Length: 386
Image 1: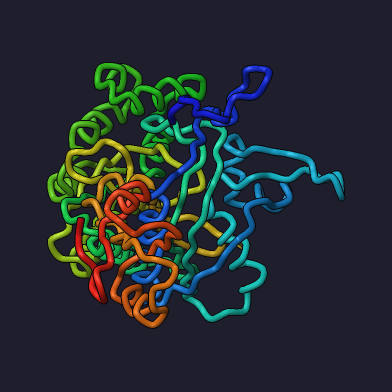
Image 2: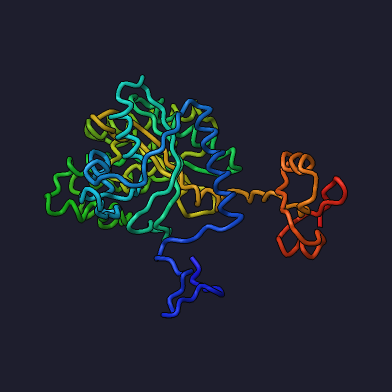
């Protein structure tokens, strides 16, 4: 965000009207239009796979917004009081819990599996570790009512197709199983008072502390810590470990999901970090984070969770600003300077061909065209590039 001021924005008290709170910014042309077009491109791909669009409200009563899976985003939620009812309301920090609420209430009798899509802005108390943005735009899909590796794979495959349509080809999907680390720690014989320190060591990827704090599971945790990388290698390490029954079931589900993704989206780059557990705390199974080659910011994330009424569900939420920063630049619509006396039928045809017609009351010459940021002039019935 830029704090630069402009003529006419300075108040008498010295406060600049162009100054916005940290993490919030104006999106100007052409970026705003490019983002809107990108969102509609994503939604078109989602729709082509049977995902029906819903539009939750930006604000909800706190009791409903933070119930169920929404409880996991409570600390990221801005709160304010409704002046009419005097009940507390919250600005959504994430749309997935809202979609889960819609599925469990208004669409409770709809056939399952239920496929829903959504797009909109969210506001978070703090930006992520790699971004200072507090207002983020999301576009995503949720598949509710089916608990299977194939459902998890469908979410990944549809997301990969949507990214490809945006021109993002060199992407990777980083798979994790957040319940696996807690399951291993529960079997490690580690005192309750020390489990927090072990989880922090795993989070920091601190092999020395993991070995020191891991109890009888230390050798396994250490091996899994070092196995993060290409999916095939990580799964091989997982299969070789003497995992307890609960952890083995989680490992097997991860392997089955990888196989299903490889069938649904052959050639997709998959990596696995077996004991990564960060993310929204409502995830209960296989999770995924999307990255583009050469970029460190997340393009999106998703995974398996329990929706309303403990309904099995999985989804993928894409961050549209991050996507468009990573995607190849999209050309802006060419701007054609025209006079107000120009033939309306001609202008309609030119707009249908992709031009934005910019009318001027003055002389439609090159100087005026450049002043109004036009790329073309109308000569006779034909546009001419400047």
